Length: 170
Image 1 (cartoon, rainbow, N blue to C red):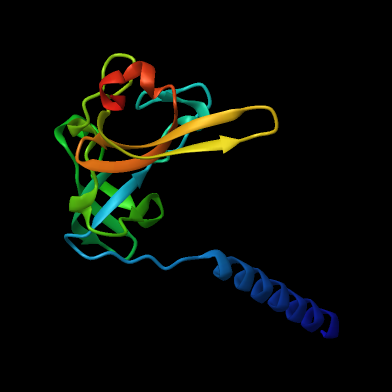
Image 2 (image 1 turned 180 degrees about the horizontal axis):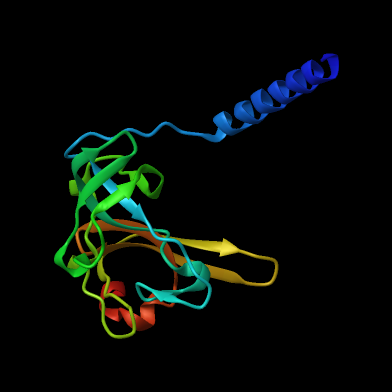
C-alpha cells in the first residue's frame, strides 16, 4: 500500500506541474456579440493561399463580425458570400481579436492594384534636402511627401528624383 500511495503522490505532482506549465501559455479569450475578429488560416507548404505562397501566405484573414456565442468556446461569424461553403461556427483558438477601431482598417478592395501587384503613389511636395558624406563620395537626398490612397507619408529618397520629376526642382 505504501508504494501505491507513493505512486499516487508522484502522479499528482507530475499532473499539477503539467497543468501549471500549460496554464502559463493559455489565454482565456472571450468575445462579445458585435465584436470584430480575424480568422486564422493554417499555412500549408506549397499551397497558394490568397495569392501568396509558403512563408508569405497570410496567417489571419478578414475582419468578421461575431453574430452569436455558442457555448463557452465557440462563436458564429458573419461570413461573406464568397465563403458560403465554410461553416460559420469557429472555435476560440482560431480567432484573434481586432485591436483598435475596425473602421480604420483599409479593406484590400479599395486599394487599386494593377496586374503586377503594384500601386501608384503620388508625389505631393519636397520638404528638405541634405548631402550625406561618406569616405569617397557624397550622396544627395531629398525628403519627399508621398500620398498613397488616403495616407500621406514623408520619406528620404535618393537624389535620382531629379530625373523622374524635373519640374519640382526648377
